Length: 213
Image (cartoon, rainbow, N blue to C red; front, side, top):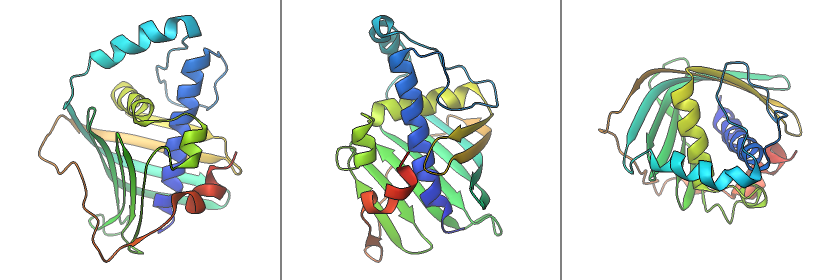
């Protein structure tokens, strides 16, 4: 179970990377394999600027979105499932928390993306990653920033309640997400302060094997 958060992070970021690359090139071939019906428009290079800009302007900064989430990750012989929550505040933060699948209460991990920072917290082992998009080589090399990840999350969360993807990696990652109890609740803490009891871990060393394609 303690590996779930570390598998989930590269899976989600790689998925956002694949979707962004697809939109940028206008390639009709899917880089990932959707099982549910998900609307992801293919955009040619000459239309990208005109279509991307209006999509962003339709969402007001500070708009909230929350949902309960069921997560299942499979990679090789690993098959891990749990529940948690997805909370987003537009142009501010994307926050995914995962809870113990047995007790269903205690938080075991957290992924928090803000415009300038990537934060991952492993509560079981009291360690965390805090880095920028520039310092996180797997994101920098794929030209992925907060805006691209945010566009992916907002579109997927609002277009479908259940999606499944096979994500290309050194060992393919099967990611299944199911959303429920969607709302625009605003009564949640957007930014996490990490306890001094936690040990900081280097993102590039931690994720290098999982992120390699």
